[in-house]
Image (tube, each protein chain N blue to C red):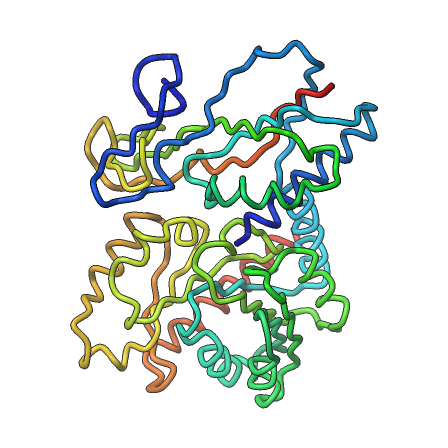
Length: 113
Length: 262
């Protein structure tokens, strides 16, 4: 359940930002989540509910924006987008794919009161 | 592309979970993004959620490089044979290198005791309910070692094929350990950890004659997930492949220390 550590990290990021920017309540936390990251969204939401208790993020909605998976195809020598981790190259059908993107886990922005 | 269901429309719609009898939490991202609904203050942050861990991992890496220590982070499921493998590696590498071990487990110091029985220093980290080691835990363990230049540091992560993939500890390489009894399709089922690793060690090869497992299929699946991954097959019991593994570690350590010195 590493989603709990991740949820705690999100809450600390918000707390740090609340101090810096002088807000007390966050309405929306917009997260970028890579399609190939090993974070399970529902588990993250569950853990966030617990981790945010008593913090500026307590009532915040988690808005998750999924970043598509991306890989370098060793057969056709280009970056390609992959709909899922085990999909073949959409151009040449090859299976020699080195993942280059879609592992993100970032807080993009906050909507605050 | 629609961020919810992958359709061509720009309007998010309800996520279809179509395949009968298959609940796939990994597909069809649910949280629909509807930006611009509120006119409240918008604060752009653009910060990696694991930035704190990653910063500590960079500090660990710099500290290890400065003291001339080469480190490997061993990740696997519970029971793959990491500790037995480490005991054998220590026996074979200790004439050429000082060796230290950080052991991660939820509970008990059994593994650290097995390592200490070889004469190598070991620090046990108990994560309680935690499912992975993080860079701060490793930094605290490093405070308790005095590692000579040229030392090898093995970090045995908590047995888990999922979570340790995301947490950089400051190691030179992640090494995924997979035993032949775990079946051929683990790389396909748990791609994150095989993507993050530079070497896969397939253990318990002495059991192959008793199993229906297809060794070539394990390798093909790992390479499908990570075409650049190195693969070494070993048996800690018979010693098969151990010389090759020791040679890989020694060569990587030499290269790593040379790079650090430049």
